[in-house]
Length: 466
Image (tube, rainbow, N blue to C red; front, side, top):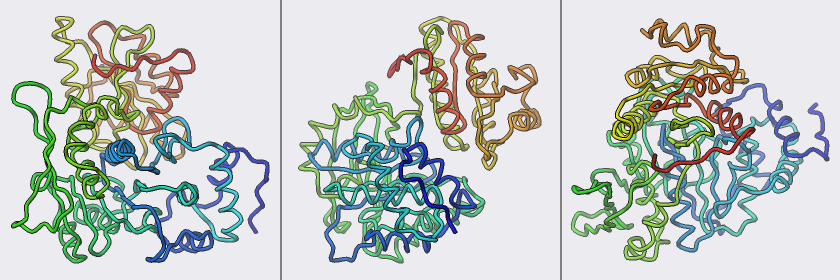
């Protein structure tokens, strides 16, 4: 028998409780979840009135797509709920309405209802949280729900809700233990969020044939980057342009495009913004392309996603710092490109190229060698650390792995790795001199621990342009 929950638990207590309810952190499948969802009235019939649902899957870029979709539709006067994972500092970040995290009380109330409904059905931490988000959204009078897939797609908890628009951001090798060891098998898992006849937005420039075949098999109108939508840089400055398609039959004889020009540089990758805008256009909730042209520049100037190539000027350290939750080779390559751009800018400012000091801690199930290869040409010193989670790859083992991959011992800031991310970051800050760059990466937990260690003492000054 499952012990009854203390009715007086606060959110911290509930999160600790649901972490222990299921024997496995990840347990793919929808059967158990569907039983509890049905008891809660979350399994809706086709005739039931519900918000428009946009479900976003992919290896990288999911958070950016969700953020843009939320921001643009909210600016258009729509009431939007978004569900994302994981969080950086506070669990409430996962469940937002109108861009604001919901309260502790709202989440606790949802957890209580789920606990009462589940009976002896065992739920994972993520499944519990997904049901809580859907329950909160059910009573929020939303126009749109934007749901981020946690893992894969076909068997992910958010897939109990039928997507009106499915978005695939990118397809890379990650989570192979659960999704398969090829891009083709991973694409097929992600295509599990497709629904018959419903549009699919594909931001992946080289989609595996399995994804295209899955869309065709379900007669899903497919909007592809480079063909139906695209972000193109200006030839004269750092501004850029977007072109996409409003919802239509995709009949070549009726080709119609929307074009938005003279967009400002943005904190998020232009490719991610482009895919998100295509999804927004398919909702039919944007007044016109003229509205986009007038409103989008201001939206993009203020749009930032915490922990995604987020630059700071740390207190008392005269060097820029970037925090990025990258944890696979594809994301590592994007981070390396951002570091290289920043080094060139610092060369112009300081007249020299300093050292790049990388604070790193990673999960055990990641491609450590691929991540090392993505960053090694930009990294001058590695500060290998540990965080307090069972899935963390021990810092000593990660250090030894990097040495096997070809890292020079002299580039290891400490051959005895750091016990915590905070210790590693403090050492990197202490070693840094003018012209250097500090990089914090490898996991959401790495970035979260780093942010907490600094904010405990002083406030980070965010820097959009350094």
